[in-house]
Picture 1 (cartoon, helix red, strand yellow):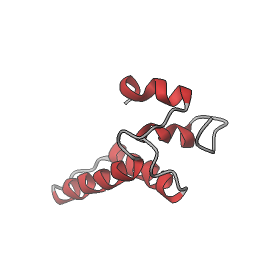
Picture 2: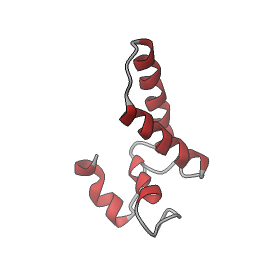
Picture 3: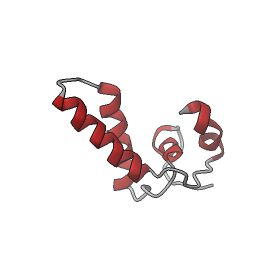
Picture 4: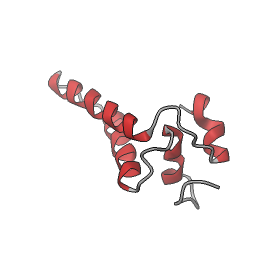
Length: 80
């Protein structure tokens, strides 16, 4: 993700190519499939939690790079 979205994260350019809402949906599907196979995927669980937080905060339509708005120090609102 850093290779494809790192620059956008730094510049706070979250124009949508793949929304956080879609990433949350897909992460949820992946975790359901993993659970059915009795797999424990902590990174996938953490990813779903972060994308779900974005959706809850009204940031779900941002590109998945918008996750930086939750994780980078001193941020809290999307945009410049």
